[in-house]
Length: 480
Image (cartoon, rainbow, N blue to C red; front, side, top):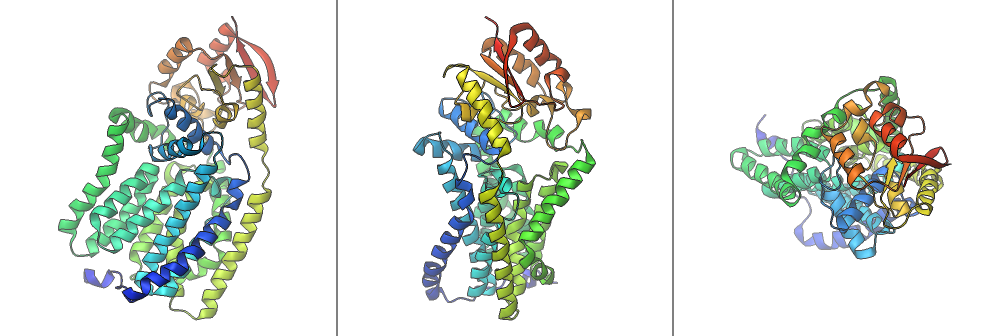
């Protein structure tokens, strides 16, 4: 089949009608984006990712350096966004970051609407934008309402497809690079973008521009941080995390559970997605397949990973609905709206057991230390530092970086020997140079408990004593 047959159809809306179209649609999408994110503003934070980012942003704001004085396996864009938001409003609340998340969702919806409108007309544009926002909350609220990495991937991936659809290859590459800088799996969108590049018939000249555009923001970020550290923490140092290990049953249960939640949220779309044309929407099917590959990465199947599936699902549903009777179109929107209402209700009434635990531990840590005292929280809740307003004594904000513990891992591959390469010598130096005034063992029987970590066990035995317990966490004060 000739390449030009697969290319998207030209715009069907007269240019003079464009301004009025967006004047009506953008306010409606903005209202819907705000409504779907209301639950995100109802609690201090939603999950440990938000806590990790908040602590990183505070350290950076006080002169810290990413991949040196604070480390993570993620690229720097989202920590920088948190830092910028805190610079404007202060670091005591995540409200400003939540506003950025609303804007990210609005931008994603608008880009999807623009892409659908160019291919299938005005009504299709409205459908794509509305359907995307309705299904955007279709996961556990801890995943859907958090201002986490995946939320900030989505505008970059949508922009990459928007630019590629218009044959703006350098801009498409830059958008891909920005998606990668939000999280490595944002690079999945490169597959459909490359497809559009090849089928455009201009790959010989377009591919170099696409590659240069993608490389530009990534290389810039590497130079602004530390090139060696950037490469290690975002690529070469994450092999143990990305490798499959742990409990297969636990991973499968999580995968099926989150897939079920997403299917319930997308109940109004799935039948239409199944009817979406294959050849005419080949790039969208590739986008969906590449996003599914991103969900599979590392076999962790956390709920927020599934957010990358939503933009291609919304567009594929729109691809089918735009040629079908109005009744099917209306049904898809109404079913999606009902599902959205259910998930919003869940978000407003969701229990907060882990947040309450972190708040109690943070209060105890704050009572037993001064504002300038470094603290070590040995656990998987870095938000405790942020809630306590205490500086971490180590660049490693969770025990996971020092033991390879993560969701789905069991004791078989958890321990010092599975830590990030070189982490324990650095940790020992930190404990000597800036000994924490308080160590909180928040392992609560997990495989990374001090009993299974010899270096930490010796540290606690030789230099600390138990001074209390809080909600299952054990507090150790330094012996003078």
